[in-house]
Image 1 (cartoon, rainbow, N blue to C red):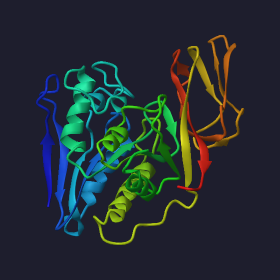
Image 2: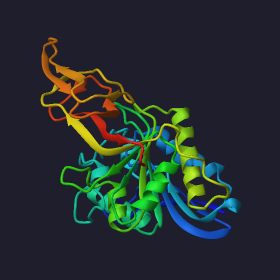
Image 3: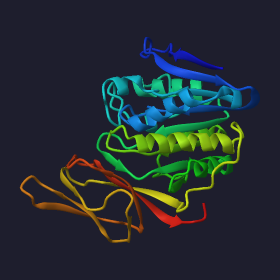
Image 4: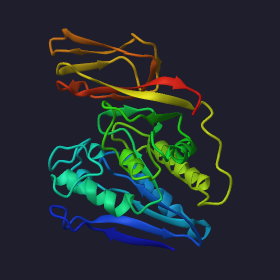
Length: 312
């Protein structure tokens, strides 16, 4: 049985916002999977993938339970706000597990964590390139006591790159996957699609990956498909930021592998003068790149997946 329901959060200031959700209960016992999208409201391919998986799912084949919410940050979706929640300008995926004593985004993160993540046995959080973000498909899992199962889920997504996010001071704190891992719940963030576009290829890629994870978890019948044929592991994720605001001339597209010292782009002023040359601090692959020429001081330019290997 697949029930369509609406999730609301009673905590101010979230009262009144409705989040359409699916609750699928299988014919057999099995794990409880939380499948979420719309952490960032303009990553449309990932949102569509959640809906596609659930509308095509046969609950008679399912073992266990799936709670699926295509959009968990409804205000971001409704206001077409890339990267941040418009109410307070915070990035929801840097705010988990959140707090009921914080601002709007902190309360939203805590509500999502308590309502969807904490009750689950495993978590899949689907993402993609936001409005001004070109992206190479990849999956992230967190270094933790439950990382073996999370790594298996990440590989089963069938994407070309798998990032193991280490616990460190300059790491990507506050993500769904890190908050879940800290609570002992295996979780994966999977990304495909870009530039705020609804791409059917990306929707199909993510939906197929979710189904394969369900087979890996023995929630659907059949053997899981093998890993991506060119699967590479990413040992560290390096984010590069603009030292000055201006016009960003990206020289390295998403998906290209670069050597240490290669030019990744330049920041210029509007007279065309070069203000900053951006070079690769290490060899790796460009996993995402800002596709908009307009960048602010301290603005993100690209994400480099370094320490590439085949030992996923």
